[in-house]
Image (cartoon, rainbow, N blue to C red):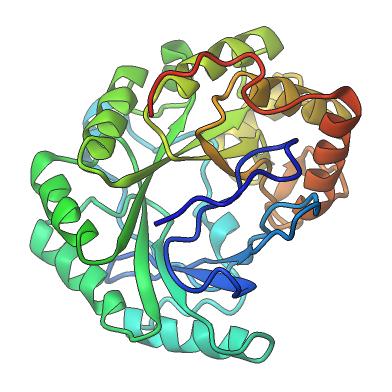
Length: 345
């Protein structure tokens, strides 16, 4: 596994490519999730960055497979996160009746029309993809890995849905193929985590990340900037906590208000501030200054379907906002890690 160079020295280190020829321009990370009720998969396109090109990878969703919400959340709070609607992850061509093998075939067919000779990472994305008995997880992960074009798996989950037994298995699997585990941390503020009904605290996230990274597994995290009650100063304070974690990868999302969620109801009754596009670009630039250079930034924004999005509607595609951010950082002379304390390797 090797890491590629930074993006023109301004933003971050590009997503590492754990397999294949460096001369290949495209790799895909085909998302899957794992429950008998529903399936979800996302395909993430990773573009090789030529020297001097100021761009990071784009992302495209293919299929996702849903699984049940974790039991720990039911014990600590009911209803799930107040901002969640997993339909925001569900592309129009996703068929929940398909098996993992069938989803892979359809996803590959979809992208083969544009890109030839692809290799894939099966991405178990939506819901919590370690919340099942180990035998069930093994069967689902290994069904994806049986595909000759699949060169690894990426697993999205919650920090309270991991245990030693599952980590031991993933450590073993990681010796045979590429494995990455992504945790939904969302915030490093326990008051915020309670407000959004997350069901765990930041200490839980810290332990999960540390236990996973200690096994040599590529470890990622998701955070949301602009959660209710968190202003710019609080967000930047949290950046130092996130940077101190032994993360390989980080995905940054803006706060989005989605129709039908409890957060949408809260927002309609008592509106709270949301960042404009320019405010968000400035914030992310400062945030990245506090994130150590060793962490690869996989995304700096997300994009919910327009028919589900209440606010903010910036009228920008992810790649457009990313380009604006990179240009802003270039103009201001800002680089990732400028203000970070370099700790974990």
